[in-house]
Length: 236
Image (cartoon, rainbow, N blue to C red; front, top):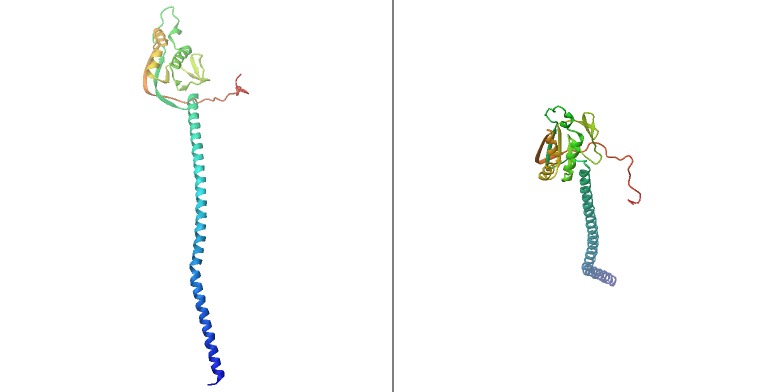
């Protein structure tokens, strides 16, 4: 064999060996670096998850704070609504119900004797005022007369042969409904020398019934003041 051929074969073998050795080194390096690369990826993923967790935790804390504030506001609104409802009932702007009495009054059926004033046997506006005042003094929380709710601006006055209540004319028989302690309300009307005894003396018909449930309707008129307004700086 010629020397040149031998040298060529040796050169090919040497180069092939070097290439194989280099390939083995690369594979080993890659195999040794793979766990490190995976660890780096896992660390990055863990950091991303921890960052997202912290963000969610902050968001949860903010939501809890908003819920707490919302609950406080809701409680305040509920308290205001309760006060408003109570104010509306006290002002007579709501239908109300509860225990109380129903008082029915009517003109006397007694014929006046000679020389007697026939008007004393008729029911008048001042009779109704006295009944209402007795009921209020006995703790009545709501009163109506023939369906007319009595409020701060209500009038009970004579209007010819009728009685005007809330600018609405009414006539006997009169139905008075009052909410309160039934026994106390009836006792106030039946006091010795009181309004019921006086009316009965003149033959005016008086019927008082205690009830477990009395319904008093709301005031239908307007309570908008025309001249009054809040005083500047409060009352002096």
